[in-house]
Length: 164
Image (cartoon, rainbow, N blue to C red; front, side, top):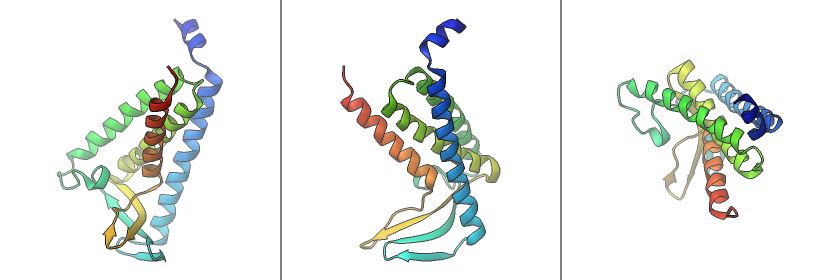
């Protein structure tokens, strides 16, 4: 079976995608570290008329889903992130010759791991990018969230336009 995996998986490409994911995770963690040591919860620094830096802690999922669930959700989200990360890494390994797909999957993987690290270390996710315009306010988010959204978009586009 080992030789079968060696034939199916391009290990140098898998290694490359793993390095890209590690760099994105490092960028996410560094930005979260930086903002937490620059500001405190409740601070807001106006950057432009539509963008602020803030420090917000999210115990829930996207858009604070289940944030007030009492704490059990942290284990659920952490467990899901681990399971999803393993599945995504396997998908990258099995499709290592499909650059666009692997790039999208790598973005999702790095975002999932970046937020999982926060959940493991802090019990919540650090958000700090705060956009607003015309009376509408987008919930604060982070680099990991950008990676997840952009990666999911790329995967959908790839699947929609791939050659049969």
